[in-house]
Image: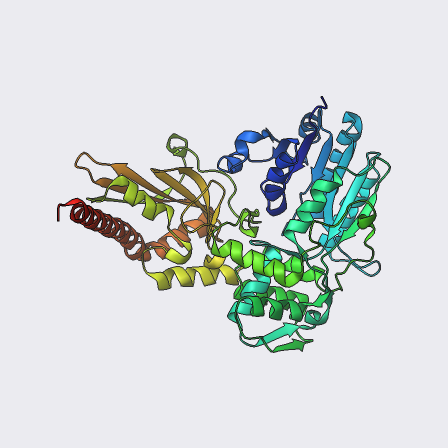
Length: 511
């Protein structure tokens, strides 16, 4: 009996990697994932089916340990929005992988890079992706470097940028790159090629351009989305004065995409982004039914969003400059300056009803207090390049560890009782918000809310005292409205149950 092959996936907490893992499992692979923060995978459906290894591609020793026994290595890590000398960091990571896979006897490397023009100056991010692919191709291990352009799928950065620009603006003043040609590809087709690339013959060591069946201008993509979303087509005026830098500021303000992610995307749109060859067809057949046309990809993405079935999202991406360290435990606070705002409320609502309100917070449900203040804080964050409040949430009813939630991220969730959010807004320090639901002896529950702030320098202390007057309104309002909403929902549930019991009694009662 042939033994199962082992695939190692890097970038499993990202948009493509998080979708690839379950498809590799379905294809019969054993899967190992290499992640910096295993806690982010605690709640994903496939976590118990894979081997999770903690490590970083920048650490040669952890890479060597992770590749032991691996047959196929998937390189899906990119520093989108990275700061500093990210090109050097990516080069080091690529060399670490190239050395480790060669020493371990890995049979195949599969890398996902980006489409780029064959000549001319590339943006730093495209240049880095090309460099990583070249290093892997020169590793001595057969490598398939797939090069894709705009990826269309529920939750993808490119799709969300198109969606929000089209939804928000009835008239589109746009940079001249809206006239550039683009060959979008559905995320399902990207995943199909990634899985099938593991089957390539060992002599294949090269790049492959991959793209969908449609070549469009960016403006046509936006109006194609408008038609699928039931919107009027948008007049678009290409303005030469909108430089890539200005365009990224515009996208940052109009859409939930933060500036750190908008910059590399827009930089890549300065050129035509189309395939120069489709040689992959000589090795891998097209998916059943053919490659997905653009408008069908949009239709599928909108359907997934409507059904609340978004597997992964651009929201999952690491936000440069955001607080990354977890909240220390309370005993570790000794000797540190920490500011707290603590609220507690008792409610006749049962704890499970209170928890449903807590887990549903944010996104379309809002924050249960002073919405104008929350909106203003979100706009302030967008103006300085943060993620803003409109990032929303992937599911309207469930949260998981690592999920983005407006300008917070879920750091810890003990379902049914405790939620801790870590701020990813631009603040001079570290900020967290905790909410807890505890059953009380009288059948009701206790709501505990705690805002925590670790100031950084004098600016952090001044920031806390500057916003202190708003805390009484915002945090008191939150505590009051959350418990009131839970109580109202509990009363509605009891009324429905009583009505159902009366109806049932009426049916079974003798005539």
